[in-house]
Image (tube, rainbow over all chains, first blue to last red; front, side):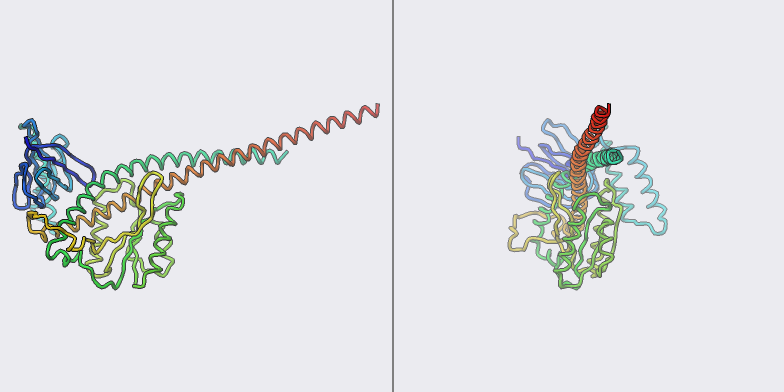
Length: 137
Length: 286
């Protein structure tokens, strides 16, 4: 079976380096799936969830808060601003941050950095989604 | 004899100093190890990002982007990263010296941004314009702090206050080795277009779009790295300095102990001599 080497790095650490069968990532133009033999691709990532299928068929995921992805026939490198595996996510904290960001966007206090609040919202939604898909699978 | 007491007091004093330097050395070693881990953890990302940036540099109009485009330099900026504290051997002075050399070789007008108290204290008394001074960067500063600094530098660059930004910092190689060096930050360096091979990449969004997102990030990472390297180097320098101080104190104690023993010996000899002479004199008298 052909596999791809998935590497996820952040400025703080190497989060993951593993042989996988497929990867799905939140690209600039929407989620995109990558299978072995993919054409060379370079894209920005939006905050979201990166899903991947391990060799045994088991699925796992990570929450990323934006970054870049480079894909090739046998490798995928994700340069994430931050990345957390589902197990690392503090659900309670993510929920609080999400509510805070949502509240800010609803109430629009003067001087609100809308772009930043939207990013925070997206980031925490991604975290919660990643945590959920872990407990659900 | 007062001489002996003085020597004894000095031995005690030097021993106390040795305890202190020993402790400082161990603290520095621990801090350096932590800083080293962070330096090493950050490198793969930085390398990879540089690689991606290089790949994009072939894009038609990459060289026209404001962060990349070189322009006529009216003011050259130098960012000097030093420590806040001393007791780290030649660390701060070697960086200051390098900065001094850079500035003296520069024919264009220069402006300085200092990070760390030592560099600021030195250059505020010189005829150099200091645009900004940042102190108290903690050992466990996070990437957002470096990002903030990078954004300020990019702003200075984009607003035209600086037409070139160079970093002067100590690059960390190992626990015992660091080198002060100058590195260009802005305009960002990309390989010349003729060296870039078109590998048929699919870009999403188009290359310029990715670059607009990537270049500021790249700049932030470079600053982050420089700060991490500087921290690790500083702790390494202070570890080495304190190790040397401990060794010197040891030598001094040895020397003083020898002097002390000699003084004691000669005091005893004198005393015996006195007693003997006294006895001898008494014998004659009897």
